[in-house]
Image 1: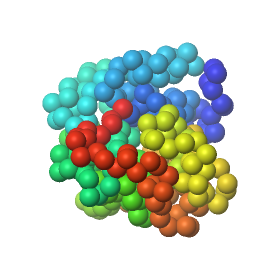
Image 2: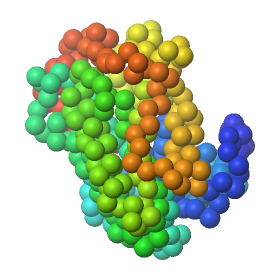
Image 3: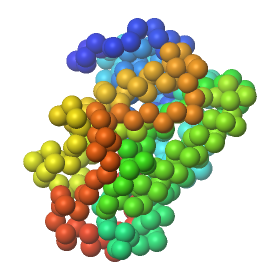
Length: 284
């Protein structure tokens, strides 16, 4: 792709497939959309803000791919229904759903309000459920498909300062496994990828200094992961390469979970835990 690294998979690996990637305006979502397009997929790009989606779409089109921008919000069923209708009208099919959108904020469990907890659960768990159910209802019950959830290694380990998102990510993993068991008869495969510490724009949202990320990152490979590291595994699961893989939770963390557990409170100013009034997670 022009201005991009060459695809790591065959350029026709996903030819004939339509893929919807949520949160595709930046980071892992954008990297996944770009590489899927390089593999021949047609993309539907979904997120709250249209401008970053258009930037992703232009990158895809400049490289000869096809992209359709569908702004929306995973938290609201009406928004999702509109998006599914537009995808059906534009492409007539949906073969792959990547649930990448989500967000959270740092707060001690003692300081998380019920409103804040519910906001993060809605962003990460309920939003993923609503997208998945809509994709199945509109497309996949009749034609099969692949759903990939982007969670986090904290779904298995502890991550103090993020009780709300740990609960949400663990919930997504349990939901995925149950749906994989129920929906196999429809030819629907569902899997999770759980990234470790990944170097994306999202790191800048947290009050952690660059030198402190080195302490937080415990990869035995002595580097942070890149968005492309996650995209490659998502494409494996979404494409025909993974057509006998379902119900799996794949950790992509450079061996980070070998150390089991983080303490984000050691990395930040204690004043940042005073988030009693915070009530909304980030979802791009």
